Length: 332
Image (cartoon, rainbow, N blue to C red; front, side, top):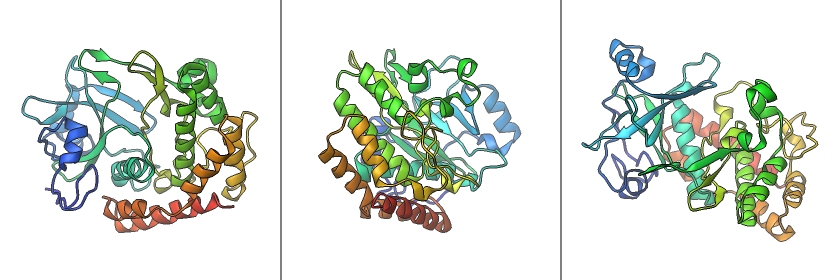
C-alpha cells in the first residue's frame, strides 16, 4: 500500500490520508480513503477488464482517459455504473507511447492545480490524488457542474465560438482562436465581465509560467450556477514540459493576439507581450503591472508545494527549474 506522509489533496504535512480541509471541499467532510478498491485500467488484468465493462468512460480525449466516479454509501470511491451520474472524474495514468514520465501525470496535474489555488489564489476545481492497489496514482477531481438535482449549464469556449471538428478541422480547439478572442467571449456573455476578464488574465499568466501548453479552447468554460454565466473554476492545469518531447509556448496557435504571434523560441515572449494583452482585453495599466509583477516574483509557497508533491525527486527539480525560468521571463 502506498505510504502517505502528506495530504494527497492539499499537500499539507503530517497526514497519511486526506486532511480535514481536503475532506471538506472534496467529500463534504466525509471520511474517505485515498486507497481505491477498484482495479487500475492500466494493469490490463482480467479484474480490470471486467470492471471497465461495467463503468462509464467520460471520454478518451487525446491521450488522457477519464472515468466517472461516485462516492457510495460506505464512503468508498468507485467507478460509476450503468446510468449513474458521476460526481467525480478520475484520470488514471495514460498509456500513449509518446508521453514521457506517464506514471507521474496524475501527480503533475494535482501539484499544478494546488499551486494555482494555494500560491496564486486562482479558483480551481476541488482535486486530489488517490491510489490503486498497485500504488499507481490517479488524479481525482470533483465535478463543479453537477448538483443534487442535475447539472449546471456549462459551455466551453470552443462551443461559445461555434467551433467543432466538422467546421474547424481536427485541431479546432487549438488553431482557430487566440486568448484575446477568448476574453471577448467573457465580455459578450458575462455580466460581471471585468471581474472574470481579470481572472482570465491571471489564468493565462499562470499557464505561461507553469508551462501548461494544453490550455486550449475546451479547457476554459463559462458556467451558469446562479442565473448568470461566470468563468468556471480552472481545470486541466498541468506542466506539460514534463511529458512532451517538444512543448509549445501557448496551446492556441495564434497565441495571445487575434492576428497571431510569430514565435520562434521562448525568448520572444516576455513582459511587453502580456502588457499588450492586458491592455487589449480592457484591464487598467496599474492592474496589468500589479498582476505581472506578482507572477514574475519568486513564490516560496509554490516551491514548498513542489517539494512536498508526489513527483519523483528528478521531476521535482525539473518542474521547479522550468517554472523558475518562465516566471523570470516576465521581467524581460
